[in-house]
Image 1 (cartoon, one colour):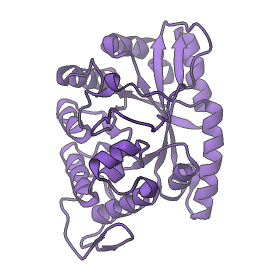
Image 2 (cartoon, one colour; image 1 turned 30 degrees about the vertical axis):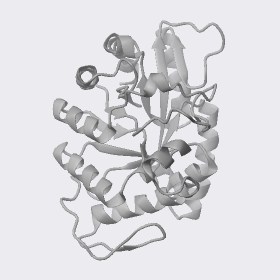
Image 3 (cartoon, helix red, strand yellow; image 1 turned 120 degrees about the vertical axis):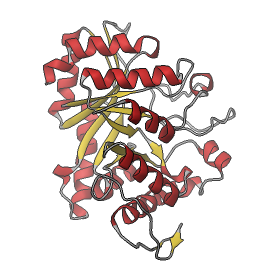
Image 4 (tube, helix red, strand yellow; image 1 turned 90 degrees about the vertical axis):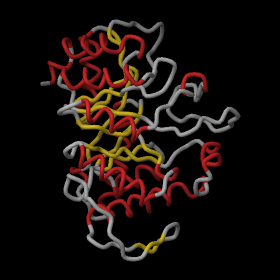
Length: 306
């Protein structure tokens, strides 16, 4: 079981110095990865429902201060030595696929092959409109095509592409990533389309704040899609991103993917995820006391999974 740390690159407590300090702390404590999330703008008028919270709410004031993920990753890569650096997740349809592939390859080269691309299709229709991105309704097929383009550019010497949403003639796009074939692509989302995408194209599934039972159910769908695509489902990593609050006892039942309580209680909660095949867990800790929370987690829980 490996553990990553979400760096909270948004919100009122997000500052360059605190983000980098937490990245360095995670590296020093032996976490395997650090992660940042993605929004470009936050429209203040919205009807879209946030898909990853119990109440489906998305509070603008909590996320308006949002640092761009690839730039943040680059700075954190320069400040760390061992941790892998990832996105959870990069919304692919927001970006030009050729330029994005180039940026990711460059970051992978400079970091010594430490990039993991967490990729998603997005949920925020108003943000799609603000960015003049491809149509929101086409985001799934655009994401599929962008992943195909990335891998062509990362693997082939003179790729060409003729797709529904993007075309280019033979070209050179170098340097290639440090990782042969490009960084692993861990696909986010819980919809039928997302799980199909994981099985057909993903190196991993990056689930967000769901239960072990939901992980097991999703893994069954992924295996079915992988089998249809003649891929080995056992090579697809199961990853979950959770909230972590050691020492906090909730008033009622904790929300799905919210791990809290004593170190023993948190250990047992993590073990339940491991039992259904999760190999990597990304933890978010309270931003206002993140370094101390990481140190406590490393001392009381992380070492038990070494």
